[in-house]
Length: 266
View (cartoon, helix red, strand yellow):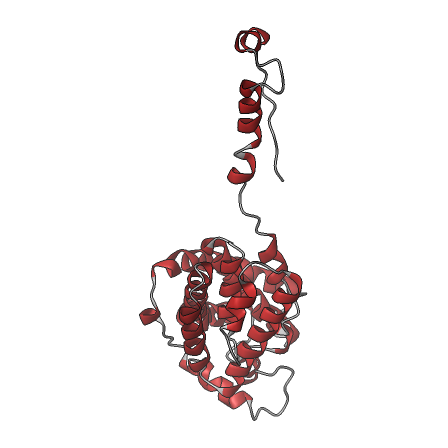
């Protein structure tokens, strides 16, 4: 919301300058200064992030658990404590960190209209998926996210940037692209993206029944400082810093393919 502050100008000052006439140059200058700067100084609205990274945005995130379903079956996630530890590792040592790096690079490329760099980051993101299930997870959500943003949140350069990504689109790249084109700052984009990732996984864990909703809320709160710290670190990292060390979770994505009972696609 833009708020304009009315300034009281002494009558003697106006009389001396002849600015009591609204059409005079002095009067126009005062009015120009009062109106100018308000829009220019107004902060960029973060409303698109609130809309894009909520469960109601049509990306199909509810269908994926990113190996949590296997971890529950295997007994790695048994309660609130083990869930927090598992998600903390995924965030700091696994796909959370890597996805944030990819999102940051896509954001920078899209912000300056570098479609070649954008396509290269996307190709790398797709190639780094450790299994077929996790590749489907990121690519189905990425394409759905990009299609939804183009349909409902148009912006100059969005279609051109999207056209640079032919075929599969990794989810973090799609988010970074949209935020960059819309001029959203990188720092809050990373925070929102990482927190939404945590919330989606906690939601999956609640549906898998090892914890309840209150415990899930505590897990999100427990991981929030880690989200903040990681979001601050990511802008300093390059694509050479990509990598993960969550081997058991990655292997779990292979084992999930043959799991007897499944609620999720990963």
